[in-house]
Each structure stands twice: as C-alpha cells, then as structure tokens.
Length: 132
Image 1 (spheres, rainbow, N blue to C red):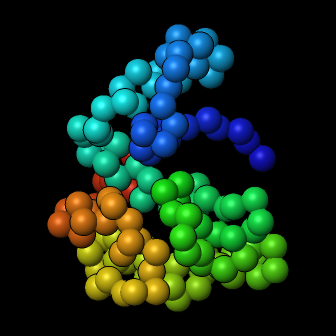
Image 2: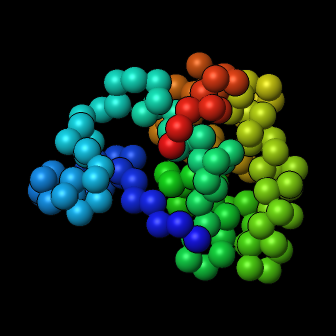
Image 3: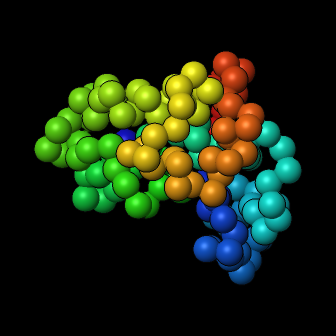
C-alpha cells in the first residue's frame, strides 16, 4: 500500500493554516486549494479516482471517490474489491461520467455537487489519462 496525501476537494472542509508546513512535510503545493478549481484537471480529479485510485472507507465500503460519503458500491471486505468494481452499478457510474449512460438515483454521483458540471462536459478519453 502506498501513502499519497492529496488536497481536499473542498477547502472549506479542511482549511489550510500553514501552506509552508504542508509543502515542507509532504512536498504538495496546496496554496491554490483555497480557491475554486479553475482548470479541467482539478474539476474532474475526484471523478478520475473511480479509474485510478478508488476510495475505500475504513469500514470496507467502496466509495469510489474522495467526495462521496453518502452511498457505497459494496463492501470490499465482505464482497471483494474486484466484485465491487465489476458490479453493474460501478460500471454504470463510469459510463455515466463519460456521457455514455444516463443518471440513475442509485448512483452516488447524482447527489455530488460536481456532477452538474461533469454531466454537461463528460469525461473524455484524455481526461482518464491525467496524472493524479
């Protein structure tokens, strides 16, 4: 397992007190975290986690991304990671974020504040290649 610190998707949830300390300890430049994301990479970054680094909660719930806290895609402890990621709901979510499938109420993303922007400008193949 690799530890990779990341900026919080919403600076109001985790305000930064010392940009210098964070840079010194982690090497991350989070000085722009207090401002709304301006570029495509920051706008779609949480959604890309479904492909590159799916978020798993401490209790085993597969959340998919770092924004979702309200609904899961199954439990990797009881069901296994592959089974959860291969599930119809998880696969539908990925298609939905790419504009290849319509939204459904059983998909956590429809409640996400970022989904309105993603639904207007779905993820593209080149977005899936962006580094995290």
